Image 1 (cartoon, rainbow, N blue to C red):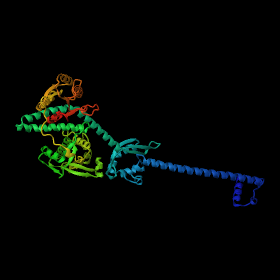
Image 2: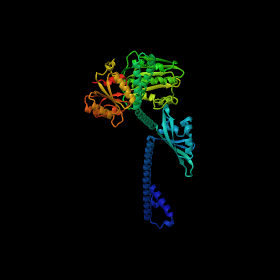
Image 3: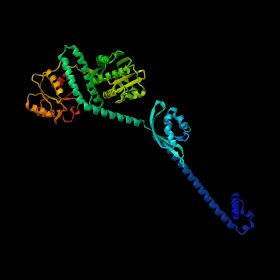
Image 4: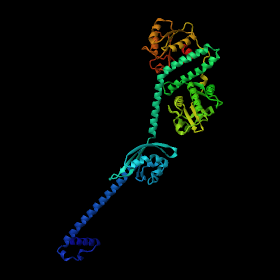
Length: 568
């Protein structure tokens, strides 16, 4: 120890510049030569310098590690702030101790105002009470996942799913909770869209399954009622009963067509329509559908408005609007139908997924009970209805929505509780000049030439009877068959047959389309018309070059005459 003390003194003297010769040495060290002492001092000085260098290296390494840790922390913070998740941590007192950027953005607050604040302060009392049970379960040590709707700034609502993971001390005591939240608004929207698509598919399958049989029934009803009206024109009492029944049967046919169009299983049949004339023609029907306590007005612009549209679907839409308005005004009120031209700006067209430009607006306004926002947001969903059981199917507005979209337009609604509603059809106008090319329907029926013989193929006896009577009234001679096999035998034996009128769906192993194709191979000069209640295979353009004329059931005698007219 004494030697070490001397070495230390020598080192200090060397640093101060003093000579070792002037150092007074103790007697026990007198035996050490100055050379040995200086060598020991030099060695210790070298070791000291080496230690200093090691300390400098360690300090440099520590600085590098600290910089790397800082960069790593920054990268981790960046990742946590940019991942599509909202992350937070709160302690056992429900005070936030951490929140990433996404979490604070949910509440439109800077992160500094979230960290250190209580959950109830950040969420608000009402929202906090909705999530409080899940927080308490998590703080008791249970991992909890729950879904909720979070009202955000700007009136926007976010659908979210949160998982609460408790932090447990070594002694098993929960001390806080990590919260991992995800915005599932788009997921729910896609799920709703998928559900709606599945509903539409179900509607199409259901409608396609019953359309053929239902339209056969309507063919019988419409055909017999029309013959009663024609054969007893002087019976005004009978006419008063027959005409409403015919209108009801016609609306039934439009309903089936609307369902098929809505489910994309039947194309629309657009023609150029004068909107004002169509609304005025419907005015008596709508007026008779409303109680006397409801005032009804039609307001039209001074200019002619033309649409390229399916008139039956437009009439059905207007009648559906009127009936809904009637139900919304049980104590009476006012119903107004307006038709006017309009121009949608880009901001006005965007919510409807339309291009900006000119449109024709048909608005149906009532002064009824109106709707709150939740109902208004669902009003066009299939099967959604606010009416009591048995009073509404929830399909009317959905069908109108599908019709408007197929027609190149859209539909909108504005409504407030107790303030009434306005439904707006937004439809593109007919191309310029197209209405000038439209031709009035032929005044008289085209009747058969003497000797024209029709082979009528229909498996339903009542339908066959009605169609046969219509053919006879038109002057045709008629042979009947109830299936394709029987019709083939008759065709082979009777060379005078010039026209084949056949149903598409028939029993017996050969349908009407197959029979018609075979008949044309054997007799290329035949005029073939297919009748169909509903069958996609009856439509032309199947890729086999066989495109006969199609007559959809139910049909009037005029439509039958037009279909049988050769040369079109």
